[in-house]
Image (cartoon, rainbow, N blue to C red):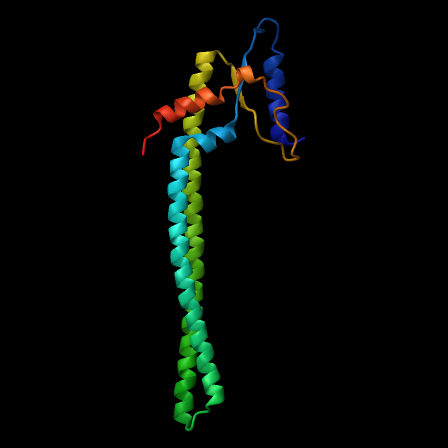
Length: 194
């Protein structure tokens, strides 16, 4: 059993088995967290904008990689030309060899630059995505708390998700306690309209 699953089990056991003096009926609600993330308008808009930015960046990188391939072809062509048409003088050989070395150096520098640029863009994308998830999660938690207060729920859990061993974390949740739709309605009512 994973630590997370064990901790959840202990919390639920403590929650449900309070001492008789503290015992009172508890109401537990559930939400489909994955559905909230997927259908929350603010989340959809932010992810769509991020994807659009990522696609644009990838298109630019594709163009730059195509130019890089042309440099490689140019270097290869120069090498082939040197082999097929040997220089007539030592000076010509030296000049042509230097030109090949220069373009090979340029190819290597361009490869390094493009690799670094790709890694930077991926890092930026992941940071922006994490910021979106954090902001959306905060919104969802606030809406869940509001709905829990309105419906008298003492605890709200996500009805989806699996442990590390792919066992469901929630084995049963009565739909009458499912707050997903009202939470989603609250979130989307407050979401900025495009």
